[in-house]
Amino acid sequence: MGGYGFSLNESQIAQLDKIHDKLQEKHRKLMSQMWEEQGRLTNLYNAEKRDPAAIAKAHDKLAKLQSEAIEARIEAENKFYEVLTKEQKAQVRRGYGWGMMGY
Image (cartoon, rainbow, N blue to C red; front, side):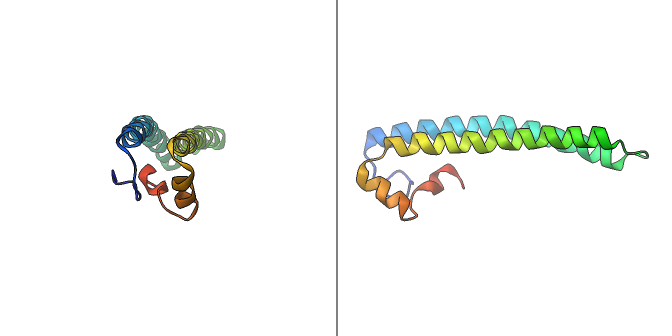
C-alpha cells in the first residue's frame, strides 16, 4: 500500500517516494524564500512612508515563488501519474491518490 490510498507494488512505492521526496525538498526551499519575501513585504507595509513600487515588486516576487511551487507540484503529480497502471489511474480519477502529494 505505501500510504498512497491504493495498492502499489514495491517498485512503484520506491518511485513515488522519490518523487514525493524531491517535491518536499523543492517546496522546503521555496517556502523558506516565501517566508523571507513575506517578511520583506510586511516591513514595506509597516514602513512610515510606504513605497507602492517596492510593495508591488515584493508582491510580484512572492507570486513568482508561489507559481514555482504550484508548477513543482503539478510536475510531481504528472510524474506520479506516469508510474501508475491503467487501473490505478482510474482510481486517481475517482478521487484517490493525489493526497500523497500533500494536497
